[in-house]
Length: 135
Length: 406
Image (cartoon, rainbow over all chains, first blue to last red):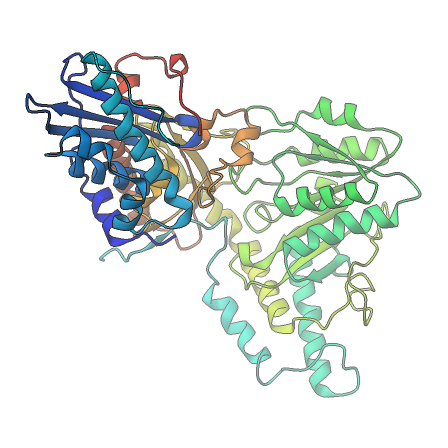
């Protein structure tokens, strides 16, 4: 399968690989996917006092498209407010990375990871969880 | 000398043609273009003579009589002809076929097709190292069993089955023995007499010959075996496979067989040293595992799982420069890992993380060294970004986590 240049670029030079301290109250962690499905994403956000995502990190087990989707997601998250982050849609990722139909699930996983991280942050800070992710 | 990229290490999928084979074939496209069945003029005679000679070369490679070679379009057709042909021809004797779960799809899907036509098929499980359980095989035989179909060497893991023992069991119970020899013939000594094989499928393009030509060996003596034709027409190939003979292909197949016969011993020795070098280096990586039996296998094949990295992502790290196949066929949305590795009892995590290496006649040590480095670097890099690797390193049991399944 031919990958788009953007996928190859994120795969070769992934942005924001790493781990944030999940014990901190202002860090939200989302872990989605399953090893037997061949995709696991862990996405983390750190939120500052203004409610803005000041840092985002990921680690992903999966194909190039899964790695690229999560790398892109972390890039997009940085500097966004929580409300703006919630609005990120998987189809935005599909469009940006030119993902073929069989790889759309990678973008879905990335969106789920964003929502899971936000939820974790919200719950830690006494806020109600968002309604169930749409997927 | 500078290393030329990309490197080809997918010789179990197909092999490049040996230039000596091509050279032998060329005149049969142009000057000697005759139909081997044209009995009345020199063009036909030349073609027939070439086919006769090639048939001898092919037969010689496997210790057969030339009359026992039925040319087909490839191994898939030979698998179909052998199994379906026996099912039809021996219908009055029984309808039970025994095969195993790690066979090639050309065998498994043929058996599934026959099930719809009334065949009873036993799909034997293999042992964790990929070997057939001989006792289970013998136990599976019933009064209705007409055929045992077990491959010689496996295409994904290279495991070589105990063919002599299998054929002895078949003989003892008066059951025919078919083997898919596609990966083994030309690579290791295969002798239909010594091995007790009644029918065998094999093909030219896995042994440095052209695509589009293969053969079914059908034993003529002790016992005399017959298959019902699956292609009707002019009655070519002793009426077992009609269709104008692919003369240039057959000539190339013959030459490829002759070269294999002459060079097999040296080539196998050289390739097993390179294969072992590759394998040993990659098994130095933490949490990497060899799939299949370590001793009983083809000299040019190895299959290794790299835990905590995903196969397709792994391939992407170097597939511009190294042609390899992943055990997992991840191109579909279903993300099915290799059924062969699953049959060995591998968990999805290991089955998703495997690479199959097929070395070949033109593989060099430089290429192996490059591959070792490229793969080691990619595995290490991907593990650095794998959440599963991090959890493993922290001592977290991945089975204790409740994963969200999609």
